[in-house]
Length: 367
Ligand code: G6P
Image (cartoon, rainbow, N blue to C red):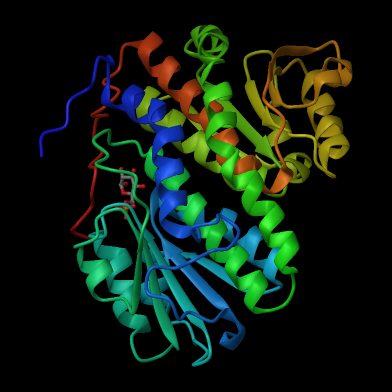
C-alpha cells in the first residue's frame, strides 16, 4: 500500500500527528470489550510463572524497553533486565528457564535483535515480541507476537512506533501486575481508564506545536544539548537526545538527573541547552534542584512539565512548556510528544533531511 504525507510537510510530522489515532487503535486491540481488562490476542500468557523478564532491542525500541523495566518492576514487582541486542547476543548471558524474553522491534527484521531472539530459543520459558510488522522474522520466530498497530512508519526516526510500543508494553505490565497479584482488578481498571484518556491528552500536547517550534528555533543554533530526567523520564530523556541527534545532527546526550554531578555538570556553560522532563511526580523536587545546579552555571533550561506552579522552579528557566495533567505512570508516553516535536522543529529550522537523515537506515537488517 502506498502511504502519502496526507498534507504534512514530512512523514515524520504526519506520524507524530497520527499518534492519538494509532494509540487508540492499539488500545482497542488489547482491551476487553467493556474496556475494563487487558485482553491479549492469543489468550494464555501468565506472568505469574516467570521469575524474571529480559527485554532486548536496538535504538528507539531499546528505550521503550528501558521504560518498560520501570513499569514491570514497579507495577508487577517482576525483575527485568534490559539489553541492547548487539551486546546481548555476544555476551552469552545465562538465562533462567522460568523467564520470559521480550523482543521489541518496529520492523521485526533488525539483524541483532533477531540474533538475540535466536540465542534465547530453548533457553527461556516464553519468547514474546512487540512488533509493528506482523509478518516479520521476529514475529514469526516468537511464541507470541504482539502487534503494536502503529501502521506503516516511513520516517527513519521512529515516533508513533515508539509510543505504540510503550502502550503495548504498559498493557503487558498491567497484565503482569494482575497475574502476579501486585495490583487489584480495581486498580488495573482504574489505570486502564486513564490509559483510554491518553489519546486526548496527546491531542492537547500536540496543540503545543508552536511553543516547541519557537523553542526549537533557538535550539537549532546550539552545538550541544543535554536531556535530563529521573525515573520514568530518564529513558525518555535518552530517546529525546537520540531523536535530536538523528535528525538535526546536534550533539545531544542524556543523563539521569541525579547523575549530573558525576560528570556532565562540567560541560555546563552559557552555550549549553538543557532539556528537562519533569512531570509532577514524587521526584519533581529533586529534578528541580538538579535544574537549579544547571541554571547557576548559566545553562539554558527548557523545562517540560505539567506543574502549573513550575514557574517558581527558578527565574533562570529559559523556557517552560506546560503539558496536560497526566498520571505519572503514563507520562513517558505523553512526554514523547515534546521530545519528538523539539527534534522535528529543530531539524526543520536547520534545514536537514527530516525523513531521511544522513547515514541512517529505517531498518538495519545486516550487522
Ligand atoms: C534503526 C532505525 C531506528 C530504530 C532502530 C531499531 O536504527 O533508524 O529508528 O529504532 O533501527 O529498529 P527496529 O525496527 O528493530 O525497531
